[in-house]
Length: 193
Length: 168
Image (cartoon, rainbow over all chains, first blue to last red):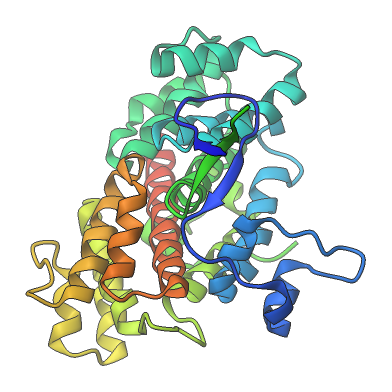
């Protein structure tokens, strides 16, 4: 029996779609290409099979996602994960928050920042740079108009350079996208013992 | 490394093409900006639009831009809407005050779009059920969600770039 998870966690839950995923054995060549299905890689998550219903967008979204989160240079990977968590907490995407908080923890070997964020949200006690990044991502996520020039000054005061600020904008905005898929098209679920 | 295209929508919208620190940062992420433009084209003008026409997509995009108080972006989507040659019934969807006028399917698309664009945290399984009940197919629900999700991204990138420029 699966139950829907409503609380933030760093333990990655399952995900149960609210709409029908495509069936792999009925997929078009274009869908198979977008899913990166090869004879040696036939494992595709329900989430990606749901998104394959709109294959043209999926095809261009996946490389965009990877480039924003993993391309070299600019803001470090852990800080991009922090930005993703800022958006996911505001948008209450429990699944996205779990994935990206756990990645942050793996990259930094520090679990306390995420514990504080999950407990206290925007009031979480963080160092100056973490705080500036988290708050900017959270505010931009609530509504674009919530993020202000003062927030931008706080980022610069915390030492972020222009290339890092751009990566912060991109990663926070990207989770405006990801949260709106993951949180609306399915539910995070846990196996009941 | 790809070249930066100053006519890409987010760059043009944020007036970020002129030389300076913002342009320099964007040049370092020219590949991402090109991919961003590609996602715009896939969400707004897909080769196979399924049950969500190009006109409906442009009208919904103008609506979401207005819900986010971005009138310049709304103007871009109104021009795109005009290009699609959509009739008045579809063009009406661009106005946030229009709620569907008794058209069940259209009303469901608008209700869902208004919620997801501004309060995604409040969405529930019932919101997806409401679309299904109004006759929107599962594939079209995914198309509608991707359109909304893309717009949330695009609007925020533009807003962020404007702030960067203002404080550069």
